Image (tube, rainbow, N blue to C red; front, side):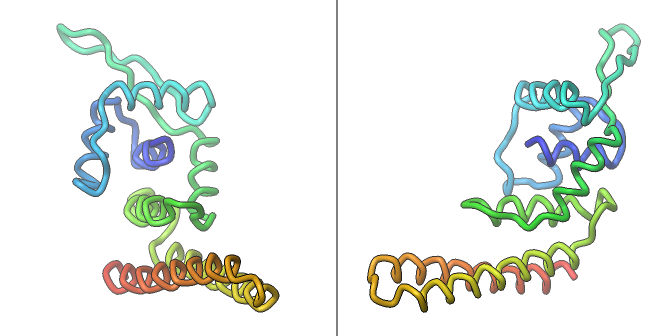
Length: 167
């Protein structure tokens, strides 16, 4: 939730409830529902890290609300996030977050993100194939490598679909 909240704040200052609603409206059912507590805890941590800053804004007849804005350090964190290919077990989920949020932040564009992710997948695929060539006699290693290759091929197919849909 940390980086999507930073991305939403790159679009302008907001308070926690606005950010939760923005997450829900931006991602709909593709993103698990969040509660206000999760949002405010994450905002507190981001503020302590210097990535955002909050200020109290008075309201008529109600307690002041805290409005958060992205700092320069937060913007750099986002730029770095958009510039890195996604890795790990949840590649599609993180990449999808980037794909949806990048154009709204104007810190990266979808075509660049897709090309970066595709290049990363192809480089990983080349490395796996080289490893498979070196481990031909190890059946278990070969099966594991074959599984990873199949996942990467599916990832590349999905990236192609993303490109067709978004560009």
